[in-house]
Image (cartoon, rainbow, N blue to C red; front, side, top):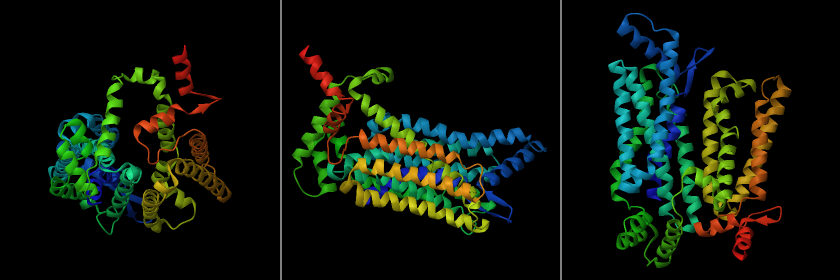
Length: 422
């Protein structure tokens, strides 16, 4: 449990914080919202004027601001694609430690950008933050999956979502004007996650490495067994290690494939389709839109303008409560499938309700939620009828479940049998 917490504050927590930290709102009179966005734009203006003794062209400010925002995603992409290389070469634990060091370095660059009057340093810091978030979030989930027993693997890996939600809440909280949401402290707000990274750097070396990495990739059976005993308690764990070997043998039996070959491989077509549909459904479910435009939504609902910044905090709180309740109470008792189709169904119905109520109020531009509602309802139907349950199953068993999916009376396993007979 302690390892889960340490991994969380250096993993998906960082990404969640930086998603919300750059635009955490605080009041500016009664007609405007002031945010880190506006603080940084004013910093760009003043830095440019100090250098060139003239105000920057508006399009230049827009371009610099766009780079500050977008470079986080660029860094995240490079961080995500480097996961296999870094975690495979150094191990899960050292990869997380290196990731936290990058986050601390990014915070140092961000802090120094203001006294140096350099918006270029903000761009560099955002690239490093993005790289850290991309590498850390992926390694975090990988590490969690490899330290957890099969029976609770789903609940353990779901803690990454909890820490991501916690990071969003912290970003909103520290961005309040009563905390750090001042123009003099905008660079400090963006450096808060470095404190948690420092904690991870100091503590993680004393915690065990991922057993699967030690056994499969390093070939160190003794170290693997020691790590398992440290994580799960005393025992020989021969059966669990045999399962690791069986899963790895199945992986090794399949030759490496290019992306095009993978798309053509009929043995994993249902897995690819399911991953794509769930990913698209998550992105088009309206969650990001509601978070981004929560101020406008609450304003349309008639809530006082100066209270909305506090009410939006409850969005983060509700997200944390949901992820904790799913992880600790539901996912291992109910299963994945009911949570998928039930969650998408409830989300779709909720968005229809939001659309209707906003229209009944005054509303002409609320129909965007209809798209999100349709996507959620379609995802609910797909996961209800086609997605197999994965609770308490090994990777091999899950693969067999996908191959036995039946559509129009046919399944891929039937095709294999027919081909074998021929």
